[in-house]
Length: 411
Image 1 (cartoon, rainbow, N blue to C red):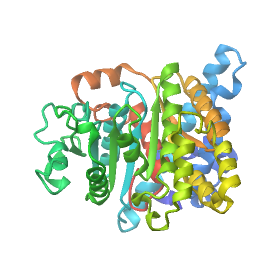
Image 2 (cartoon, helix red, strand yellow):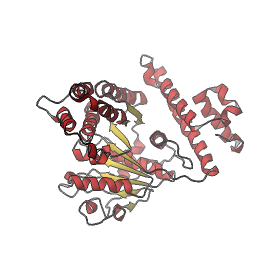
Image 3 (cartoon, rainbow, N blue to C red):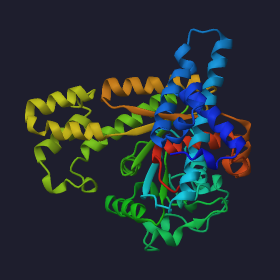
Image 4 (cartoon, helix red, strand yellow):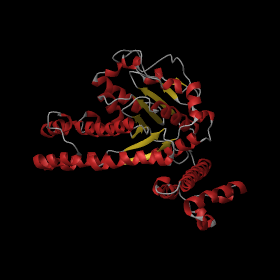
């Protein structure tokens, strides 16, 4: 609920202007409507209006009309950011702080150099600015660089010390950065570190889950090795990053497909709690269907379902539940415009729905800018340099989509 009596004249004007974009001018002018606003209604209106105004929905229009629609789209984006900040600020002052349930976010993609580390660092800083306890973890174990984007040129510790049992607790190797998040650095100097044994990998997964932070953000390597995919699957929220380069978005789809197939291979994995119910016949069928390259591998999920239905129909509900629960989000980096980013996202969404029967949530785009390039060169997170800039606004909105509204926290 929104207490408009507590707003200044200027704040009220801006709130009504934002509501006009999301709900229409008539609703924005009614005090009773403003007092009844909820975070859920704001989110629903944002999704509806963002879709309505998106430039890509008017692809045949003249260039000036395309530009106008893109400006309208960004206005809706800013309106959502303003309303949620005002409402969550009010919650912070009127309610006791409620601790955010620990959330693990993984950022992956089957290609290096697409901006995963920049996204991880800046998202971590944005969340830290909102009062959350955040840790950024570099699990690009063969080529780490996350520390650079958080202003740490030569981190004194890294995750190899934990993997090699030199320390017993991840907290012993966490570094407090000057920009807010704690950093657990990667170990690029250790040959073979990207091929850690399975049990050590499982131990690291448990340690990440138990680390004392509100949010853990994992920056993964640019490949589809089992290690990277398993860390990706262990997260509560999963983000795939791509760029407009055709090779990049094809790799992004492949990353999504490999991740789903790996999840099916690990139906009875100890990390998912069904090891005691293991059916060897189903396990073998899934290995064949998702791994056998000599002719037994399926091309799509429909073929897998048919195979399970023919051989052991009683396991079909389990397979369906795994597929239905497989959720991930997509971020497009370096697209020249929102319309271009949406076009890439739709390609990935369409093929994922058609061949994998999953819905990929589009979380937004990162428009290339000189500010981001300068920040990357100078080892300063762009959102720390410009907390109200376009990147910061985009990442705050992304964070809300990922984490939802938590009473007493400003996201």
